[in-house]
Length: 397
Image 1 (tube, rainbow, N blue to C red):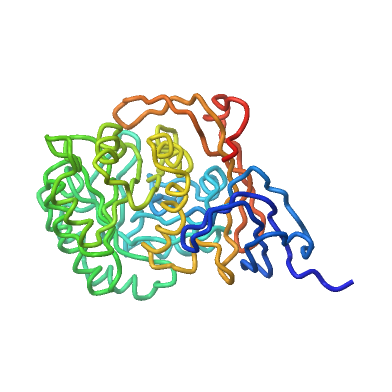
Image 2: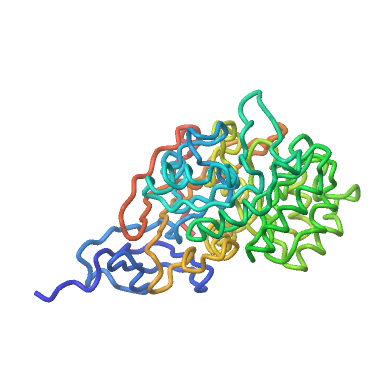
C-alpha cells in the first residue's frame, strides 16, 4: 500500500474562504499541519476522513479584540475557555498589558497556551490595570503613564507576538489628557510602522476628533457604539469624518464588549451602506457573561442584522489577519497553517440584546463543531446560554 497523500481530509462541508474566492461544497486536505489541497474528492487519499456534510468549513476564527492576560489583569478571561467556546484559533489581546507587564503576559499566558495569542501593546505603561465589576480607573490620564520610548522598545523586542499599539480614548480613561493620549500612541505606532488600535468611549473627545487623526491601516474599535458619541449623526446617517476615514483606509472593528454594540447605531450604519471591516468580541470579565459573550455570539448577531454568512466569516478570518499583518493566517490556501473552524448554522428563536438593553428577535445562530490548529484537533465546548434556543434543523444553504 502506498502511503496516503493526506493526514486528514474534512469532507463535504461548505468551504468559505474569502482570500481565495472560495465558497462551495468541497473537501479540505491537511498534511503535516498545513493546508495541502482544497477541491473535490480528496478523501480517497487520506489517512483519516471527517465527514462535515452540512457544516461550514472556515479558516480558523481570529478574535482581534480580546482581554486574556488571565489572572494578572483584573479584566482578563481565560484564553483557553474563550477559544474553546467561540471556536477561535487566534486571540489578539487588545492592550491588557503595557510595556511594564508585557513580559509576564508572554511567559505565563501566551507561551503556555496551545492557541495563537498575539497582542496590541498598550501605550500606557501598566496596561489596563483598574477595570473590573464596579471598578473603572483610566490608564491614560497622565503623560507620565504613557512613555512612548518604553512602548517602542518593548514592541521591538517582541515583534513575533506584538502586532500593534493600543490606546483607549475618551471619558474617564483619558480624562483631561484626551487627544494627547492618542498623539502619544500614534507617535509610538509611527516609530514602529505598525497599526494603532484605538478604543472610542464617551466624549470628550468626539468620535470625529478621534477618527480624523487615524492613519490608513489604523483600527477604530467599538465602531458601532451607541449614542452619545456614535458614528451616526442627527440625520441618521454615518458622519462625514467616519466616511472620510474609511476612504483613507482606516478600519472599523465591532468589539462588542459592555459598551460598544448598539442596535440603533448598527442598523443605521448598515442601512447607510457602512458595514464593519472586522468583527470582534472585546471579551473581558464582564462581557463574557453577556450580552456580548464572545466572537461567535457577536458573529451571530451581525448575521441576524442582515450581513451574509460569507461576509461574517470574512470579517472574522481573512480581514482581521490582514489588519494585523499576518497574511499567512485567515485563509485556506495551500501551504497556509491548517487553522480551521467548523461551524453549523441553526435555526433559532434567540432574542439578542445590545449594550443598552435594546432587544431584537433572531432567527439563526452559529455553533461550534470542530477546531483544528496547525492541523491538530482542538476541543470545542458547549454554549449553554444559546442551546435552549436552537429550534431543530440547521440551515442547508
